[in-house]
Structures are given as C-alpha cells and as structure tokens.
Length: 254
Image (cartoon, rainbow, N blue to C red; front, side, top):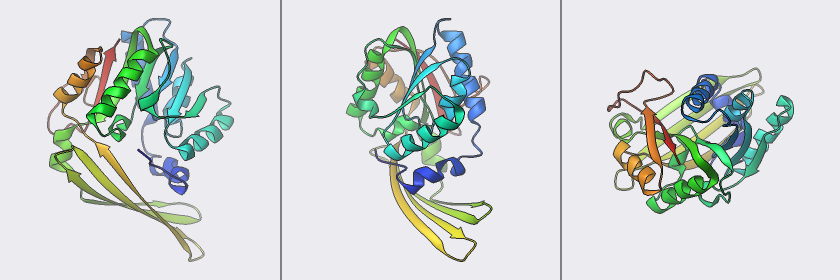
C-alpha cells in the first residue's frame, strides 16, 4: 500500500492543485446532513493524504481524526495544520487495522483510496473495521474507481507539466491493467527542471484496485452495512452509472 513517499508527498498538492476539494467537501457535508443525525459531528477519515478535504470539513464544525498509511503525507498534513490553526488529529495508520469501537458518527475514504487495498480479504477487513468504528446509524462515505471505465478508457501513457516560478515539473504516468486482479499498476517518473539548468528525478510505482458496482455492493452487505445511495461523482444529478462513469461515490449506513 506504500505510496506518495518522500519528495512525491511534498509535490502532491502541486499535482492536485486543480482538484475541486471544495465541491467534494460540500457534497460530503450535504450527504451527512441528509442521511445522518443532527449530532453527526465526529468524523473519521481514511487515507486523508495531506488533509485537503479534512481542513474544509473542519470548517463545517466536524471534529476529525484523520489517518494515512504514508508517514510523509501525514508530515505534510501536520505542517498544513499549523497554517490552518487546525485541531485535526493526523495519524499514521493502516485502514485495515483500525482500533475504534462505536466512536464516530461518520467515516470517509475519498479520492478512490479504498483501491489501495488490493485483496478481497483486506477490503473486507477495512469494511469490518469501519463498521466497528461507527456508532449505530453511522455513515460511511467512500469513492472508488469504476471498472468498466477503467478497462475501456484508461490511458497507457499520460504526460503532464506544471510551470512554477523557479522550475518546471514533468510527470510521466505509465499504466498497465491486470484484469484477473482488477488492478492497475502506474509507474510514475517525475522530473523537476530548475531554472539554473539542473534537475531532480524520482520514480514510484503504485497499484490500485477498481470495482464493479455489484462487486462493491457485495462487500458492503457482507460486512453488515445498508446501502443508502450512490452517485457517479460529486454531484447529485449524476445518478446514471454507465461505462463512462469513472468514479462512484457511495454512502452506506451501519
């Protein structure tokens, strides 16, 4: 599950600077209002990354306990917390090994991060641990990669550039698909090209799982959750799931 290590974690917020975290946090908040209790304020975040969703949700009054498997990502989140004057608890941890009992009103796992857990056994472990962590009636909101879109439309090679004041960053992503395991392997090659003519390079390989909708519903039911609703993204109008749907946001209840 290791990903976003070292310098890659430091560059993470640059790479996703165009991601609409505000829209996504607003969407999660509205789901909690609609399906949760009025007192739903204690929130557990799995795979929190550098905390971008967490800081926005904190503004709505949620008390957050946020985990990530990457020590380096948590280090970035804690540095950002100082600037935000945040009270969020950021902790290094494995979502497969949570150790809470009936403590949280809501759990979230966004940005397809449940896909970092690759095997059926491990995915069931995550759902089981989240179930134990939630109070009765608690909500679990999570996002996952949708298999049909991944299999039909993935890009074998993607290249993206960022121009900064003192450098350019080039990221090359090479993706392969393994159908039997429903996983993608992405090899990242990242170059920082500095204005003085020097450069730095890093590489990292990540594996992620993608899911059929019915497959995910089976995991949900197996672990005692009740499925309430799902969407083809962070928009309530996206109720149709088809082969062009890349991401599914699902809400289930204990």
